[in-house]
Length: 168
Image 1 (cartoon, one colour):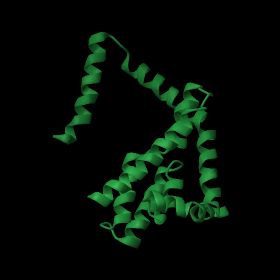
Image 2 (tube, one colour):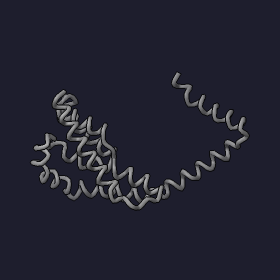
Image 3 (spheres, rainbow, N blue to C red):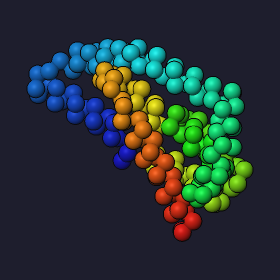
Image 4 (cartoon, rainbow, N blue to C red):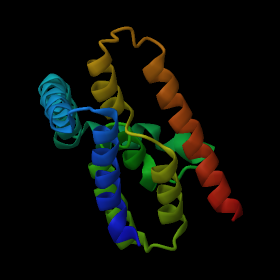
């Protein structure tokens, strides 16, 4: 049944456009043109984020921050093995998935650390990526409260995730 969902949807759109007397091909071309413009407009923001992520790992800043925040995170109940994961998560989804996979292979998928990382991964977002993509297209430049609130909510979610994993 699921193999037919997309073809049925395409047929429905074509029949609907015939019924409403809309040129479906022109609408498709217009949408494709605006998608290319979107890619061109968001590309510089994405390059900047990818550069920051790479610089954090190559320069050793993420390792330094891990050592700096270790006592604070341990006090809050977050394992120190997850500090670098929490630092990386707001920047990149694919990097977070790679780090999650690494945590699985190091500690096992059923370990406390892996469970915490899995819950954090599922309940947080790549804040800077989302802000770069969505706000660059909407031309919103006043991000004064948005980024700190997103980071704070992700941090609180990580504390709650680790607490819930301890209980369960």
